[in-house]
Image (tube, rainbow, N blue to C red; front, top):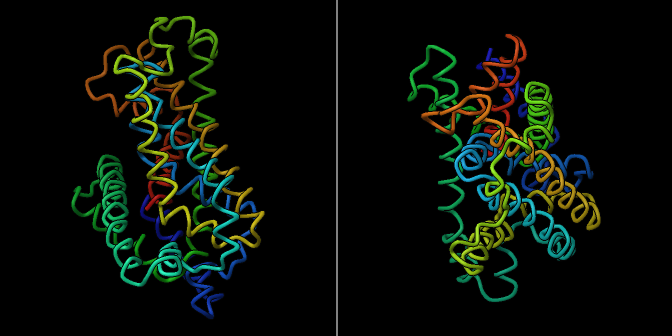
Length: 317
């Protein structure tokens, strides 16, 4: 079933590829993305394994301070990018982010920027592919190496075949699955612990401080500077709003994507706060969400939620 789900995404990429007739169609989706596709593509591209698995683990260990970077830092970065950069870069009529540096400086600076940005994208995608392999391996008879290879080949294939438009369409499908999966799990867990207010009442007061100032405000600023500074120059984000229909759509869609990221990111944060009461001591904190899903979701909903986690990973890759 999981393999079939991935193959459906591949089929969508092939179907979308029939609309590609030029370089602009392939790289920028023909500059035809509406606000819905921009919003979900921005959201789904950022909302990956770390948001669903790593953030609740940090909140479980540190309290709300574990959510400073994700979702708050990354969500703020997306909103700022939409408000300050998206419309301006779209109006320049560029095809890729590197074009800005060629126009402003020189082709050699453009090449240097690409060389500097590329490793981060590859490592980020590799981390998601590994997470995909772990989920597939844990829920099937496949070996970890086989699952990672399958994920890498299929995701690369439908991205190459369909370009940005295929990415945007599959992002919308996968993003919807993530949203529904998290809402269902969040609602069911909330009913088990007496609601959000009931959970917060059980949390130690010290764990409800969002900003960990033990290292001083310089430490807080440094934590936030990493996601914000890294996001506003991320080619994955810029390529999505450059494919928007208009400059306003680029700006509004990116800000809405950031808002959706913040909103949905609160659910894993809540689950991380509820975990000590529901699960007690957990050896591997990154297994909190899968363990909650297994414990509280009936069979078909559990399978659907595993599909939602895979959706989050695929959309980032």
